[in-house]
Image (cartoon, rainbow, N blue to C red; front, side, top):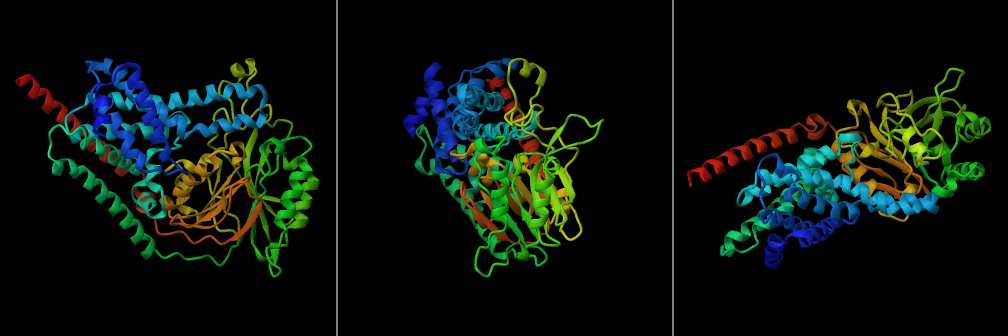
Length: 536
């Protein structure tokens, strides 16, 4: 480590860029579902040491100088590893589309790395000795991660804080400070080893203080999590029982024009399956749930299939399913929605929700006219793509506890589930991760979503096409699941919600206050250093 510290500080040009990309790629192994947490404590100090050796520039030029490139190259390596799975979507259509995959993954990683480059430049502006430089980079990168999760529709995949959710005990702290608070903590802890090396003639006792501080903080996090799991009671419901269906239909097959009957037969057969000889099947549950876009067609255009659903459902039972939806009528606009529908045993749609937070490029095409002229479309089949729904809201129907419906990646936005989440008895997330089969994407998406249950203190019911389908309790524990890629079903009973967690009450305000206080301390330190240098 002493050699690595000295090499990083003295490196310049392409050698420094290579060191940073490799260190960032190593840090990318800490994300779910890999959770190689120790790599953070080896990789992130490299960023500190490279900034130690970076030349200073005055004024605003520093924002786009060596410090910016240091953060950018580290971030590029991190995101190339962490989000490489997005390239799996290009295999669905195959053909010439595959030639775009490397460029698309590299471009996305580079765009996300811009946030880290700016953070590095801001931190270098406040650069100082000792622990203050760790504080400066923690401050700047924490704000950059928050910005990445919110600006330009937001892309909060693989926030550094997810590395500190490697087990359910560690994840409990998200109920207090949320994933962005965990991100700030993870960045600070990951950079502490930079205070140990290089040796610089310091005594071993002094140099080991950051190491023991790191151990104490991690032990406290584990201790708090273990205590919360032991003392928090959960109350199961007695008024509902859900059957979750994972059909595991391959994405390339699902949207073929001749697949409608195969898809419907798979869903209907699975739904009526009896798990044991004594299993009452659909008579023993209250709600049947299918995944996002379970039926790759407009249900209103297929009345025979709607009638088949009605015949399958026992009296008083309901189906909740993802399905495309559009408006009908001579003056109806040309719009399609990625919707969640609730259908009763008479075949009537009694409630619906339209996805409000769509995936750019994936579900709709920004500047559609321009891109269509180049022959490009969104990933979702169809000529028009999806349209944004009006607002986040609960589905609250007589006989069904109010729940918050979320489609696909809407569930990864910490603190962004809407004010209505406070009135939800549980969270329902329907998703179709079939786009990313064969990659870590589906598992990563599941782990991100799982943290929302802990933050909000509400059970999470997740139903996926190819996996992972699961019930997660309000403490983040997996009660039952169907593995990725497996055809299956589970019957589950979600627990009642916990009293509001600290995060549910205060959201991101503690994070902002800590960032504001840190900014004040860094500004004070910057002025003190300036006065000291002038006095010399």
